[in-house]
Every structure is written in C-alpha cells, then in structure tokens.
Image (cartoon, rainbow, N blue to C red; front, top):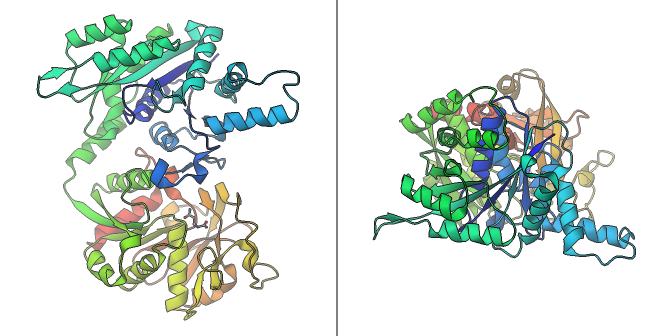
Length: 538
Ligand code: GLN
C-alpha cells in the first residue's frame, strides 16, 4: 500500500516546495520505488487555464490534456514521471464537484459543510488513481496560516488519522533567515510556523529549513527542541548554485534516508546522482554563451514561460553552451527598433501567446530572422505568426491574418470550421470560443526528407497542445511552392503541425508545445537542434 508524504510550507511563499518535493521524488524513484507527485492548490479557479500568466506564471499542460500548476512541470522535469489530470486539484474543483453532487441530490437530507463534505472530497482526491505506488507526495500550495489552505490542511490531518502514522508523513518547509546586522541565524519564524501548523492539528515529522547559509548544530537543536522533531529530521537546504544541484544537496542532507527511516523501509540502492553532477558541472563551468531573443507578452514575469526557459537551458546543456535569454516585451516593441535589437542575436524564439497586442512586432521580427538567416523557432502562436508573415510577404496576401485577432482578415490562421468546410473559406462564429482548446497529446506524422524528421529521428511524434486556432491547410500548395513546407501533419492530414523553411539554416514552427516534454537529463531534440543551429550561427 502507498505511503503518503504531505509537504506544507511556512513563513513565506516561494521557498521551493515544488523543487523539494520533486528532488525527494527523484531520490526515491532512483532507489527503485514507484512514486507519484500531486499538487493541491487553494484557489477558487477550477484550474489555472483561465488565469493570466501575470498572476500565476505558466499553465503547464499534461499528456492527458489537463491545464495545471507550473509545479507539475518541476515534478516532471526532475522525475521524468508524466503527470496526469488527477495530479492537480484546486479548491474550485473540489467545491464545484461537491456543489454539483448537492444539486443532483447526492447529499439528500443533509446540510452540506466544509467538514466533512469538502474534506471528504479532498481525501478522495488524495487517494484517487493510486494503484501500486510506493510513495505519493502531495504538496499543499500556499503558506500555512492562509485562510484558503485550511480545508486542505484539515483534510490531511484527518487522512493521517485514518491511515495511521505508519502510512503518512508530514514535511514542513520553512525559512531560516540570517540577520546580517547581528550576524545570527534566526529560528523564531520556524518555531512560529510550526506552532501555527500544530494549532491546526499537524505535528511535522520532518522540517526542511531553507537558509542562505548552513545552519549550525546549536540552531538545529533549538529547532528540534521547540518544534518537537528529532534532530536528524531537521534538514537544511542552503541556496544551491543551480537547481540541478537540488537532488544532490537533499541527498547529502539525508532527506530520502530520513523519509525511509520514518517508514521503517530499508533503502534498496544508492540513488544515481551522476547525471545531476554532470549537468551541474556543465551549467557551472560552461564559458561559451549565445544570446537567444524571446519576444512575448509576458517575458518580464519570471515564471510566465517557465518550461520554455528550462527547455532552452536544456538545449544549452546538450550543446555545452550557456544560453542567455534576451527577453523582449512585444507590447513595447516598435518595428524600427527590431533590427537593432536582433542584429547580434544567435537565434529568435516566438513563444505561445494569445490576443492581438504586440503581434505586428513579432511578425516583423520573424521577417527579419527569415531574411537574415537567423535560426528561428516558433512555438504555437509563434508558428501561427510565422505563417502570417510568410503569407503576407511571400504569397502577397496582404490581409493574411488570424481570425483570433481580426475577424475581417484573410484567415491564414482560423478556427478549424472557419475554413475547412468543404474546402471553402467560410466565416467563423464566436460561439465556439469557450473551452474549445485542443489540449494534451496529439500525434503528428513527419514528412520524409524534412529537417524535422532528422531532428526527431522518427516519422511519428506525440506532443502536447494548447490552442484553439489552426493553420489553414487549404493554402498548403501555395506555401510549399514558395518554400515553406508543411513538414508535419495530423494523422488525418487536415491540421498542419509543423512548418519549416527550405533555403534557411534553421526555421521551424510547431503548433504544439515541445517545451513541456524537455528534461534536464533528456533535453528535447527540437531545443537541442535549435541551440546547435544558434551556436553555429554566431
Ligand atoms: N492563441 C493561439 C490559439 O489559440 C495560440 C495559443 C498558444 O500559443 N498556446 O490557437
């Protein structure tokens, strides 16, 4: 039967609960255990799909098409375990399930309440879809003490009470600040945070202390005494030089060892840390660097393109080159500045996006990369913009556009039923705009003798999607005659999945999001190839 590890956070947010959970998962998986990681988010949105990246960072998409919290991206990258829809739950989802059941008469005669109905539903989620896993790591979003997370904390308290201590473990992550003025490490915030947690019924079994410097034994003893955990279970996590060092650091601090000891399980074998050591080494010691420009709407927000930033870095690791990301905000980009901004870069990337703002700048930048033979990768919206640029400037369709942005354009990009009915372009309707995105894994068949087939070394690929609009397939021959090849298509040959330019060193657009499947220990071939081309360009 599975053992459940609950991870809460205290003192401040952004301490790296996701990274700690993911590192622990790696260490356990690497010892031969079957692990699953899930996230409980205390906000009222049913999923983060409708949230702005300004608010919440990237929306991470799973194979089975769930729009989830970006922490699931960390989990996947560190463990190589594909997350599922059932691995992310929000307060909104829980409440909407309970209210739906109430409307259907599922609680007939009863008053529906947070305890037990909401907490029961949370407990169902914790156990859902678990078969032969050895460990299930559940991270609770937010910080202990928040009103929002209370039902989750209450649910895990009940869960542990029902399953017993031998099947459940509580890890609490806190912050241990260093005060420069007094040259001291302070344990009080940790003590308070644990007090807060205990006041709502949870005694942590392991405390992970995030700190800028190593915590002396005396201070650890203090935390152990005041927080009521064995000294060996006070684990420090000092800021690492690169996130790839995190699994190594947690291993050195014996996090996995203490977890196994708690459950009275013998370690099967030593976790394999060689790959992490190797990429840490490359990351810290690579001297040569290249500049990749990313033009997007949310570039200044740290986590808005998290998986993309990571995938580019993975591509750099594969090519032993440091990738500097030059983030250019599309809103403020004037066409007359583009030449200046792009003339010295090694590659251009236009990421996914929604809405009209800043699109003309992106289109102009793509033209510049196409004409100046600068390696270009267009992802989702980026591919759509590349198609529009080519249609306008090479096919001379001046009104070429996307019906997402301009209802009166010539829809080179459109809702599928706008242009594909009986092979004719017909006018679209607005009624399909809600909840109609193509989400999750879809197959693409790759054309022989194409650049993309050489990159993937396969004629069929499966990649994750998140978009509503598609490239108009009716113009395929016109595009191809001018050198823009539709080199990847959906199996029914209706939906262009990949475009590539002949007579250009590296110009590829993909309708899907390859970044979601890139891993530090297994960089995605598309990013490795893009960075290789960029390295050669300079
Ligand atoms: N806005 C575009 C669409 O819905 C592209 C989406 C994206 O880049 N993820 O098709």
